[in-house]
Amino acid sequence: MTYQELVSKLKDTYQEKDASKISEHLAIQFNIQGEAEGALYLEIANGQLHVEPYEYYDRDILVTTSAADLLALAQGSLDILEAYQSGKISAEGNLAKALLLNEIVTGSSEAPSPAESAPVEASASAESAPVEAPAPEESATVETPAGENTPAAKPSVKAPRMSRKKNRKRHK
Image (cartoon, rainbow, N blue to C red):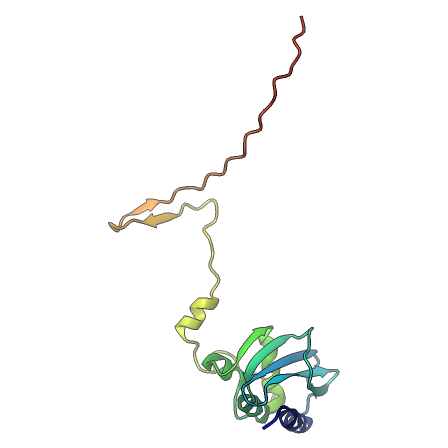
């Protein structure tokens, strides 16, 4: 399949979908790897859905995938959340808006919640979990090789010393 054929199939597939229920603006750029390589975007504005063979610089989401997986997403045989969790697609940006794509494809007004779909692997959730440093008031401890917890050393910040010239005139 060529890039032009892929864009044509996506336009035909999404033309049949009803985006009138979507009141939000949505712009997804798809970077296709492998067969039919290229970039295209899907935009929903004022209830109208458009697929165009260009990059979209002010996009909400950037999705990188294969042509086959993109067609499966468009036809509804592949859920975007499951595809993301399984690694079939990679995405960056406002991922919550990606669920609007499921709403268009399935025609339902409810996008699946993360609890309803496959669980996220521990390695994926550990990478995305925020790391918090202890608050300045809290005392942090460090575990020593012997297994003891000892207070962590507080970082010391010293301001550089300013040298003054002693050019004072003596007054009598």
